[in-house]
Image (tube, rainbow, N blue to C red; front, side, top):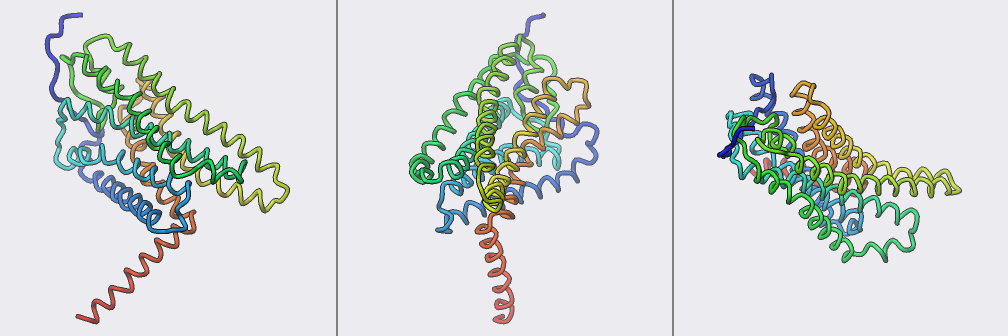
Length: 320
């Protein structure tokens, strides 16, 4: 290889390859999804904090999940909207490194919270008498702290491994935001350490979490099948279906994106971009809708808030 004596200070974001003319209009659905994610997750946090009956481990974990979803979507959405609306394609090297760190870190925190929620279900169904004694507020605080420390520890090397590389060839990325695998492919150097560490970190965090979540639900389903009453089995299954849907919403796009990045070089570039956007934008939008639709207390509070708002409007008009 020829010597490489400089590195790019900016990268160029492509957006949606082949759909550049439609990007301006496609930004409106993306903005709608982001607004729904912000309002939905903020509403979940507000309702859980103000409703005394929701001060339980499962709902505290739900608040953590909502906060992480909000942070994850906010990391990419402002720059993506600027790209689609104002053709702001350039992103600085430091801003790119920040996205390379925060995106997998927040994803790993969400994975840990989903594991904690699976453990909460396991204790509630398999060991109900010990549930309250084990999952205390102190334990939940430790779970949140460990999730942040663990995720930061595993994914802080991502930007450091990228920063050691030189980029003196193309600086055009194939996504609407910076991804470790995408930036790594542009490097004019040996990227094998990046490949090995990236795969190892994903397997040790998300991979281990997925295995433990699967094990938890195997034990949960086994315990449910031992219940004597069909009504009790149906009720127990109903409490698990909600969380299983949230887990699938997170892990299915993650696994699909990882497979496409490593083995889908022959695919159309837009497939990579769309899967990357789905992976980051779908869970923040879907999760609050799932919990609002399936959790009676949250649904009632949301309906009550809208009812109060609708009742106040006519009064304001009459007074004027």
